[in-house]
Length: 529
Image (cartoon, rainbow, N blue to C red; front, side, top):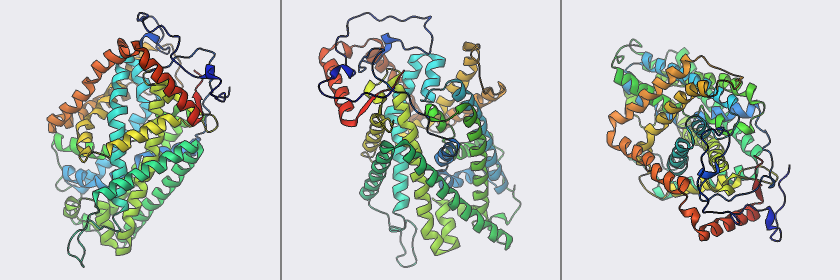
């Protein structure tokens, strides 16, 4: 069914709060199926509509190639160009470093297979939010939405945009000392923020205009990334064949770390560069034939990224010694500068392009989380609307962009991410346990893809370890992140459980008008349930 066109004279097609008895008691049916919506725990900002309200089904536009490009492009960001320094520091040797990157890819693949079961079993966009809500209920789902929407995703998006801007300005403001000046030249932070904001605005426009345009742009970015990675690897292979083995001047396992803590920190740094392997689960409803394309995408994408990461690290060691890697703030730039001045000038552009592609994937997937949360009645329902023709969730995309732009305002947003680093692994821990619980809770529901139970049990243990790692090394910052999660408890009680604000007719009229103008201005409408 198509979305009906909206006019000011026909307000009956609009989602409003009018006519709802806001004083009706809360009713919670414990026997209600988890797939259904409990009207008693809707957000106070939700405008109601009847079952016969206009709606449209989401079309599946993301094919296998687009899906692979999104996963690969989402994983390969700035991490592989920066984090090798920290992996080498904790691993201690070349051989152990390469093993960490290899097994980091294996862990990502095992986690991806668990998410593959969830994505083919629960064919709804929204990823983690939908899985937590189904496994544990609406309260845990709300806590996730509280942290993810307002803090974690917005902050991560802002940080990635700043990383893009820093590397994009590197050719004009070289951060490393030059022979001419003898000093480094850093770009004005205001210029970096302005460029980051421009990147967010450009990608927001692309994603609002067309889903296919955003997907094709992601394919282009991913191809450019892989070509850049291939060029790095090719140069390194040529040097290795020529006998240049600076990083292999001693036994490859000499100096290897045997401390469980150091090995854990090495894996922790590597897994940061592998982040994004679960991005496809946030756009499940837009993937063609997910039962087949989910496993195919993961089995192609993650091994491909793992191979690239191992070969890139081999490239680094073919040019740089371990001491040079440890002394470098950006290993890729040091590597390129050692090869040739031309390659040194091009490398920042390669890294910035990689970040730009990850930004596009981040906006594409994180806006679907907002869309999904709004559709599940825990955010204003205007955020769960899609454009009449392009079917892009324009309100959700704009909200994600606005929150990211606001995160650019403070000067210490990096600290926010440090406070919430362990939250991502905590979420993964709870989700892997939830997968095990859903095997029992939804045992009668057929599964088209099913992993051995040992895999989610193992991944739950690994995620729990990675959750504890930053908590032990940075207890104050991690405690602050935990307090942000706990702050969602009173928010749930006030806005969802008791609906105190929704009892105000003034707020009801305000959000009814907001919904009306969003639909008229952006030509959007609700999605068919």
